[in-house]
Length: 567
Image 1 (cartoon, one colour):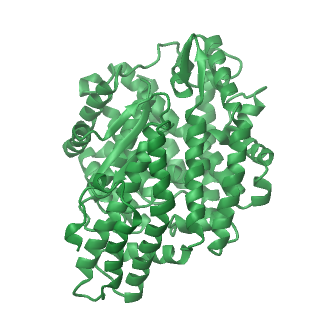
Image 2 (cartoon, one colour; image 1 turned 180 degrees about the vertical axis):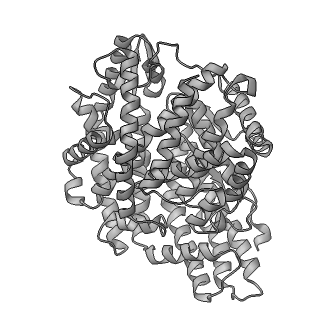
Image 3 (cartoon, one colour; image 1 turned 90 degrees about the vertical axis):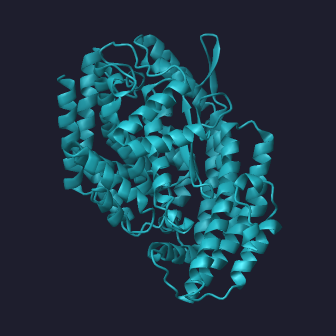
């Protein structure tokens, strides 16, 4: 019957569960043995990939236009009527494979993951997870609707960001305060949303046999290679080596600006009074020049990106009603990536596209693996793919290399990027430390005031050098503006760990770029078929986050910054 399974997810977006159900029942009824296992896995993989792509396409439709009521209705119908039944059917097939005790070649890690999923699976949680997804969409709607009237124009808060690069300090401050006021107007709405999410997540954890959501999510994320205590070690290493370097960067900026204290509206403007970098005027230019950069890094990577351009797999422009942020989504059956972002003409947009391009290349490289279950890799490795590409692409930002800038501006952009890496790690420690506290202190964390106080204390510990005097409400509600906290809890330390891996890939490229990129691609091609330390090793990095590893990264970044500033 699988000969009749549609090949394209677009053909089954309006299917009801009963139309998928027969395929799952057919697989569940088959006798498993060595002679049939390869065919059985292949057909299951095709079916699972089809369902995954249906979800992805319906979700994408809700983010490209949050005002599209039909798209929202279709996605909610999937969440209510397809997702719970599909999850249950998938779980039965996982249990069938586990009970068979068969161990297909290259399936060791998927089997390990399936065992964890089997132990976590709980029918009672399916409707709760659907509610969580709907509340996540509500977060998108609240934040996506935030706009202000600036100089006679209605601007989204993303569209307001270029003003923060204006050399007129009073103008920057006015824009920053206006945006902050608009964000604080949604304080009560986001606090109520938070309380709902907290209650649901605790129920999900307890239904699965856990005392708290952190322990549940650790297993849900298949984190077999490090612990919450390792994250605390990482936080301490960041405090030891990165916070002083970040403070030095902020102090240099303050001196260059000639101000007594560095305020939050002073962090994006060029400290030497130069005009903001404006790398492109439209998305076509952004796409074309980014493609040229990818071709310089590696011709095949450039071909991958060209395929995305040709097949309409890029939605890059910011517009009202579009969900915030950026992401790359796999269309699993088509074996194609889709990139979503909100470009407004800043250098950050170039970095975002390089970043999401790395995710897309992960999809392309791992697509040669025979089973979709082998292409399910961890978030840590996913972010190595993306963050490495930011660093590998940086040498080609100059127009002489096909990129966006003069040589001087390309150096300036690289300085901003490397400074951003340094400044990111302390912020990551705030986000991760906040989540570690939230989900191990549930009763206290359901009170938004306690969350505000915890966030503010962590901010003061790690984010040294920026003066928030008189801006307490904005500082303490910073957790409202990190979508990961609401939508993907604990998916932030992954960025910090991956950045360490990416810096090592970059370090290797300084000695031999061709060899470094070859190893990078080889690591991506493994998908999720090896443990995390082995995947890192395949890319040429080590999976570590102790004081020595962080110190080595800090020293490379500091020396490179010093060299670039001396040019």
